[in-house]
Image (tube, rainbow, N blue to C red; front, top):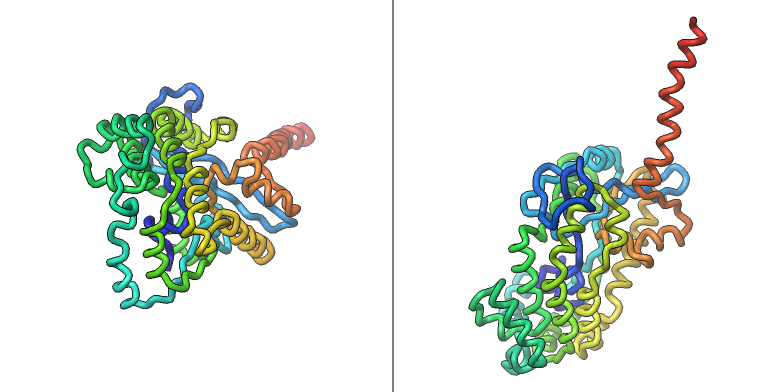
Length: 359
């Protein structure tokens, strides 16, 4: 079974809940000159990265979230590339193999009740330093109102809920707009979708969930950094959104990276529960699983389309760097444009030469 949002958080992929990602703006303007507002309309997004070995090519789309609520994403390059591809690589993920069956899953449901709550009935006021709790109360009043239930949550989960509300108020959405359209086109044209997830087997999911509910977690730093992101990071997210829309790769590459996701992942990995389940190095295992799938696709297919989160794509130790280290040629959208320019100039000059000869 593929992890739902609660499984993702419980089993260590909290980075996806708070990762800084991005959205689009009108093609005729530059992101650097746009105000800190969220654009709407039909937007092309960035170009594709080209990863090649010989005549086999892996085209990579950098996906981002949150995106503008009213954005209509259209990319002729992506659709044409996908239609010519023999496969589409899905983003990194985790597949939980619990081998439960239908009735086993039903039996598991009661154990999910209160899974986000702090152990022993403690509330946020009981586990957070007073200055941090005061910051929480101010932001909660703005984005969540008088929601009393969230006070029972573990700090990590409370911060996720606050973040989602803040993103929504900023006219952004965490919907995977680009990914959904890529999947729809693949299914409509029978293009194979390749699951690149790392499969993790949970031998006793009931016991695992029970252990999680009763285990402690040092997630105050995760909580604080998510508050920082909400207090100071929304304009940055909007700027990233505009840069993604206009294909401004330079701006995306140089904007500060989110650190809250890593803090949350570290908090989870450091919990006794995670160590008992062997969940310490999930991000690296996920990356290795995707890289193995990319190697296989490049060996088997002349053309493959892949999707990767933009932050993971552009990071100094991210997927592009890993692909280069494996000996593949990697070209950014700008590098491809630069390489194509001389050929275009030569093509435009050819008719004039032919014409002068004819005369």
